[in-house]
Length: 166
Image (tube, rainbow, N blue to C red; front, top):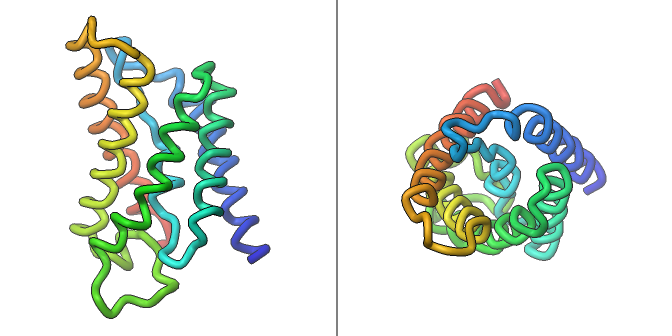
């Protein structure tokens, strides 16, 4: 358990630093933003305690909010993704899957991992950008932010997943 917590803490710090120092500075067309830290909530294993995944995701969102000056947006959105992740993961697991299976392309297969990651990133981006704009006055900018960020985030997550554990 201690080794797993250290591994998660290392991944949290790494993703926070990459997001804060690199990806927050990349804003394409003033609205499309890569949100790669969602990957942290996607890869929780099947038997991971729900309370622990909620705390980890909330803490990750809180760190991102502190670096990005978005009070509560990332924390709330990440917590929602952590709530939904175990239930969505069950939809994409084989019936005879082990209890210790991790959400990855290797264990789920690329098709199921792409589906799981896509659903969670879509939910995250819709909630995040809806809370950020908090109105539908400029709905074209809102839609552009959501769809552009979904595409860019998914490309980066699939890139991370393809180079992970080779």
